[in-house]
Image (cartoon, rainbow, N blue to C red; front, top):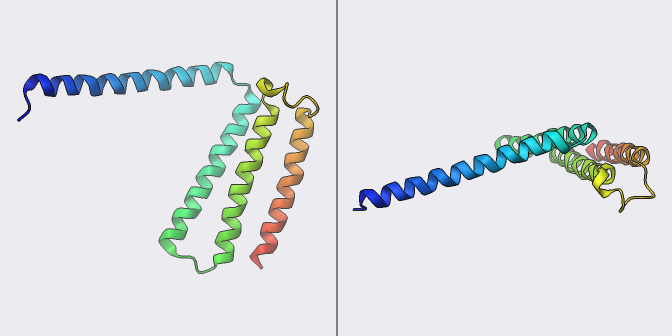
Length: 129
């Protein structure tokens, strides 16, 4: 049977880990709110929305089955493709990456995102059959 000192030191260590994780999360959140441009925050919201949509589709497929398999596949490919395109848009429009993308303006990056999204969804709709 563990002694009280062992239990209390384990509890203190656990609380210390939780506190340091909480402090790190709060520091990250405050830094994100302060230093991230609004346009990148909007892209991040879209990324979270697309990720949650893909997770919901996958869970639904597990629970309900894959009867119209082409429909599931087209929808899931659409969410994954949209996530990848939005992540690329975020990388290209991030001011910290301006040196790597000197020849691409944020407007051009957005136009490429729109065209690529239209093509992606065109193929996904035609994959439905």
